Image (tube, rainbow, N blue to C red; front, side, top):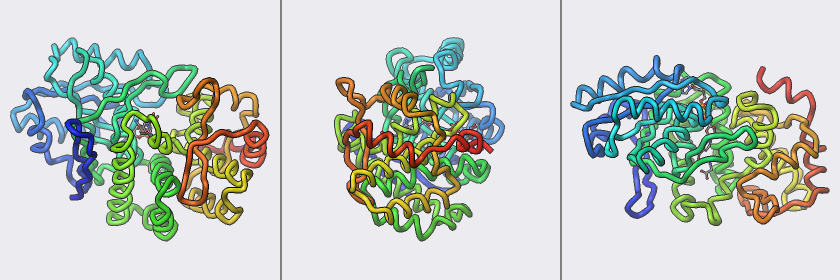
Length: 368
Ligand code: NAD
Ligand code: GLY
């Protein structure tokens, strides 16, 4: 088992990574202020992993309430959030009752948000079961739901007490979802870890084959990168924004196509290519760099061409981004391969990147 620590003073916590860590209920029980938890999961994950977790906790004398949500990004809404509150109130969950998020990023983001506001804040634990959630969304305390006009627009920073990333849960993850997680893994290499980017180039086939050692290393290194950046800038006043590489374009794709049509990781992948194309337009990376990025993203089974929403629609959707400051859209761009910065783009550069990196065909082919 590997442990990564996220250092946030009194809000510090461990991220445990390894096959079988889900069975380590003692790590959970040690943190509970009362022997009561509410496990929030969804209709896909519940039949796979709820019973062993629930049985383990009950065996340790913990009273367990379960709340099973509908599955899908399109359910990351106020209405679904309310189902969590319904379940908590019906079970008379108290301030010391701990919420446990068992699932991917959608369950994790919604459960975290519910924990942040239920009775003004209750403890919560993340048990991420997708690659994306293990390398990104379960770590760092961003919680949110979507609004029809903008992705993750309603939320809160609220840290979990523990993250348990069981690599064995990835055995049941569909290939498309696994690839979506690799988008966020590649992101860490591009942001500020060239050595990791090069390791990914050399090991992408092992990762795609879900080799246990390669996966454990990739999850650990991703969490180390994320923990370092969040440890420096928990509330995203500066450097944490770099973790949004590709997300300004990617969120526009997700919202523009309708939540769930493209997976979050797919939007991020195509968005990172657009950000790289803009960086090429600015003369900061070379065509060879761009080709390497596209090759790695394609080898991870991800889209490298974005759907052609049109310049006007892209601009409109990107104007809703959380990085917009005084009406100006901020982009995460590459100064060189493995080094990023927060900058802005002229409409001419955005148009050139979209012209080179979008296709009407990408809309239809994405979800195939
Ligand atoms: P997801 O939660 O929708 O999970 C993907 C699919 O896999 C779902 O159908 C889910 O039920 C299923 N699933 C989960 N675990 C499984 C398993 N072990 N076996 C089989 N199926 C399984 O999607 P995701 O990619 O995990 O997360 C995407 C979400 O995370 C987006 O809403 C995105 O905005 C959010 N996100 C948040 C942060 C953050 O910092 N909070 C970071 C990145 C992404
Ligand atoms: N996923 C971006 C962040 O956590 O800041």
